Length: 69
Image (cartoon, rainbow, N blue to C red; front, top):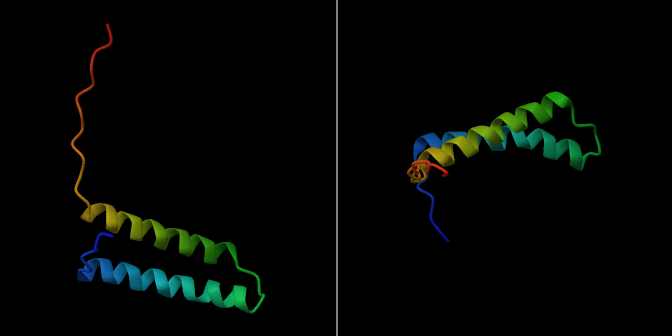
């Protein structure tokens, strides 16, 4: 397993994701409806987390396209 360097930027994104996710988990636990707004907020938070992780991963070099003869 690779360890993730939890710098302050990534920690903030993870905290935000947990903050957005908490009311959804509570609604599910309480058998209450989850709104489209809740889902949109969670989706945005997940994208932010994925973007933050991608920014910290080594970037693959783009390979030059080969001409097809």
